[in-house]
Length: 286
Image (cartoon, rainbow, N blue to C red; front, side, top):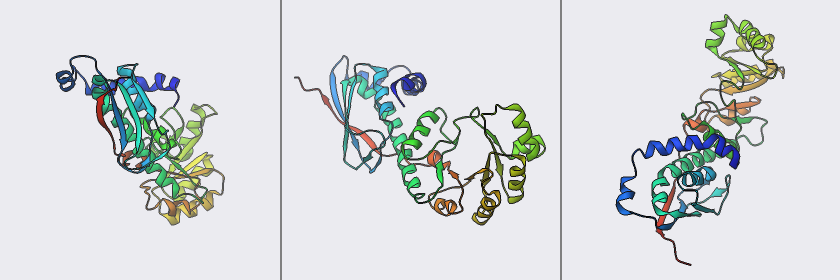
């Protein structure tokens, strides 16, 4: 996420988050600070993990006041430890106080996802299976959450409904069957779009292969059936496992030989990484 993409894609979302937190002023800060006073505050890590979202954290303060300065001692993707001093923020103390919670919300959430993803991806080392996220993201947080997955060592599935064709059970029902759904998708979409079909059993997998699906999702299938499906598909399509994937079962799933495993838990169940802004003080005169 570079500075250009940040301003094009992220600024509007960050502004909405700030508007949610400030409707008619920060009355606590306004009560104790009537005018500009420069101050400095420390960003402290309170848990071991993977840090992610530093640019977003900084941008919150920059949107409030471009003169705010942030000095980082780590970068996105770095391992951080409990008690580690990872940044110093300097600027108008009113801005530091008003932006604190929004900035930390982004940083804690993104770091938590990166940490959880890193721990899950580590379980797949030694296999050919790649870890994917899903669209089970927090509304208006997808940009940030999917970036956090990549930072943690995972991979992104489609970003939204415009990216790729995924024919689920209800699409198949609406079309009248797998063959009909795949044919309709081929006729409707550009040749650059891959077609993925969600299958719940071996017979559906067989139909999807015969219909020419590019990717076959093995949805909530027992591990034994997944292994049989991978053998039956035999490389004629890519395979993806999905449905109730957790850190406890991901290694067993990978051992079936699937190409990808997607886990909504990466974004909907990752706990935050605890971080805090502490020791706000007037900036020392130079």
